Structures are given as structure tokens and as C-alpha cells.
Image: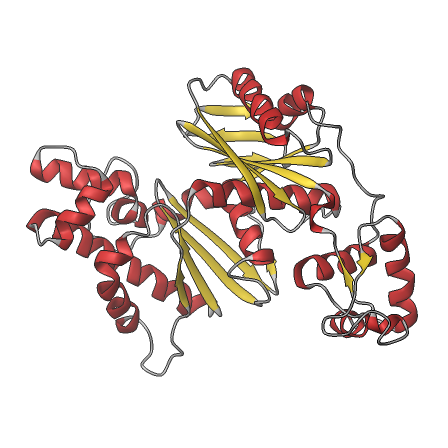
Length: 387
């Protein structure tokens, strides 16, 4: 069983701003830090003193300057000690639990996965506790746990509704805390993934950033002013079902006719092909068939490519992001229909509009588990109530 949570004293808003800046962008000299946060030298000294005393921040040698080569505090940048604390992140899917152990800077140092053979909340919590023990083996400074779940999460503690798991009103954080002795944060999995990319990934340092995920469902996250816009309700799950891209498009069991979900998600792409050819194919088999020119698969994948291009263009037109990250287990679509996607984006944008900064990431579920660990870092270490 891991050692109980080790944390720092609660941070004031000013201290939190300093800690986040160094965590995400460090090491930083005091001069750079004061400029970034618009602080006077005296205010910066006041805010950094307790952070250094608590060992959340440390003074490090300036890059390129030999020890003793320059005097005075301005030559001693501030940084975090990445391996001073470890965090656990879990991503729960319909049939698996993916777990990672990360440093304070979200670097994955271990991973451990287990099949989900039951959806009973108590037994799932038992499984998470066992994975916590396995991942924490040999690590003394495990500070907390983050859990990502598809669906509506209330108060970062209760799974209000998760259709993938058949849960309603499950107090998952409390169940896992009872079994591990560690503080736990639960969040919508897409929100957690967006936070990780905003702080440590594709959106680092960007003012306007969008994450779009395709796979079992459609996920969407928006970052404005460098901060994720929180969901006001359950709109993440409803996003793809209600965004109609082609009113004459396919009608599938999940999603309205011609919606993003009907056109782009893996289950509905498989449904369309199965309905046409009378046999079940995996997503990878459909992509391979489309690439080889098989008519049914090629038509379904080309239609999905046009839908994705239209969706990207509409997001770019309204949000004007600096970058859109396309991720999820369904991004193999770009390998086969990438030209269709790009042509459709261009056709749905003003001729003089700036090119859309579209980055495609083949991400596995460990990346999503890492996102949950980042939520734990933000909330449990830095005391951020809304990130």
C-alpha cells in the first residue's frame, strides 16, 4: 500500500500563479518570472519564499553558467523537482482500465492495465486500489489519484451519469479514497485530456486552442486565454450527437441523422459498413479496405472524411484557434481520407483565411490516463479549484 498523500501547504492565488508558471514553463529566472506575471521584484520574493521553503520550488544552476560563475539571485532560476512527488492517473473504458504513474511534470514512468470484468462500482474501486498498489510499488511519495470517465462528473467526485459504464450517481472518488488512503479527483475524460495538452502538450503556451477527439464518441475541448472553458453541464457528451453536418447523411443507432457522431465515430462507421455488406469488420479492416478501393468502405470513409473536414472548418470559423489537436483512437481516418479532410476544410473557409493549424495525434488510452494524473496535480498539489 502506498504511503499516504504528501502535499504542500495550501497556496494563495499569487503563490499558485507562480507555481503553475514554473511548473509549466520552468526553469525560469526571477526576472523572467516577474515579467511573465507582471510582478515587482519585492512581490515575487514574497510569493516565492514559502514555495522554496516547502520545497515545491528549488533554485537551480543557470544553464550555461558554471557554478560560482555569476553572483546574486537573478542567476539562480527556479524550477520544480519533477520526481519529488508521483501521481496516479486512470482511464476507465467499457472493458479496460488503463493506469499510469507520472512525475510532477506529467512524465509517465510506469503503466499498468487491467481488464474490466465487472461494472459494479465497489468492485471497480477494488480494482483501482489494486492497480494503485502495483503502480506505486517502490515509490514513497505518491501524492494523489486522478480518474477519467466518459460521461457527466459532478464536483470532481461523483459520476453523475456514464452510459459506457451504466452508472448514475456513483461516488467514485470516495470509494477509491476509502481503499487507498489517497486523495482522489474524478473528471470527464475529455476534460482531463484537454488539461494535459494545455499544460504539457500541443496547447502549451497557446491562447486559443481546441482539442477534437474521435473514437467511440466525439470529444471537444476549448481553451481560451490559456484556460480550458469548463462544461456548464453535459454538453461534452451531447456535442457530436447534435452537431448536424449533413442533414441527408446516415441514420445510425447512436446520433441524429447526419450528425458528427453518426458520421465519425468508430461504432457508427462499423454499423454503416455492416448494414451494407452483411458482415462485421473492425475499424482497421474498414480503413484498409477503403485504402484498397473497396466500394462500400471507400464510400463510408470518404463521407467520414468530408464530415471531419466540415467540422474542423466550422470550429475554425467560429473559434479562430491557433491550433486544433485531432486525437483519439479514430484518427487513423486521416491516413486514408486526409486529402478529403484538407480539401473540405479549404472549401468551407474564406479563401483568404489563415490556414488551420491542424495537428493529428495517434493517442492511446495511456495518454488519457495521463490527463487524469494532470488533473490530480492541478487540484491536489496546486489547490486549483477551477482549471
